[in-house]
Image (cartoon, rainbow, N blue to C red):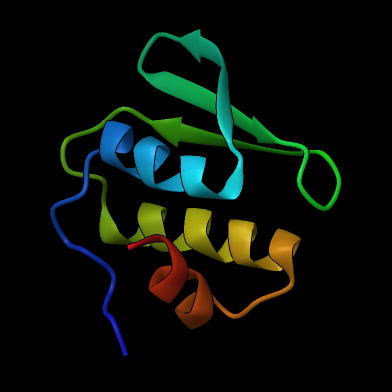
Length: 80
């Protein structure tokens, strides 16, 4: 089982999420909003921090996993 990467920046995460069809739809200050239309429309906001705090990253991944109806572990395997 893969672990959540500890040194991921907001930009890195956005690149990994492109594999799931997420595109950058808005940039406001240090936050980026991504949207996908796979399995319905879904928006997430990612802070452009370096690195992302592990709790923040975990919550974003949990939200994405919920949208795609997979476990967080399956999502991590898919995108990293």
